[in-house]
Amino acid sequence: MAKPKNKDKRSAGFSSEEEDSQPVGKSWFFGIGINDYQHFPPLNNAVRDVESILQLLREQYDIDEAKILTDGQATRRS
Image 1: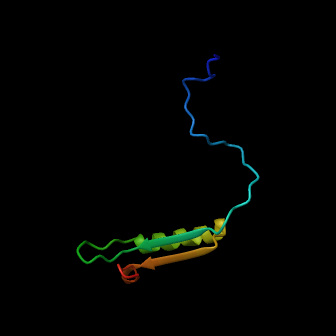
Image 2: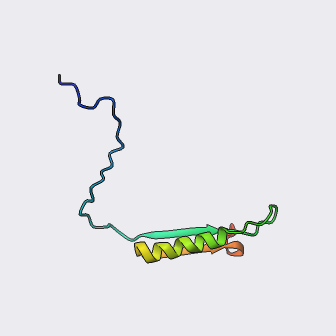
Image 3: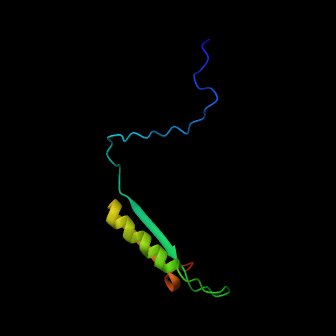
């Protein structure tokens, strides 16, 4: 039986070459950003970060659907 080449190298199976493929289905983003917590000190950038991520995804990746919840919108019921 032949020995495999590069037996000491490991690979995750990714290729640096782009493949011609068509996306399947819709792309979605659901983000939660909470600055104001009841029992913890407030954060400064969580809301701004999730809004910035959504903007980047819309501008560069043309996502189909998006939903973000911020501060009081993000509850167990919602």
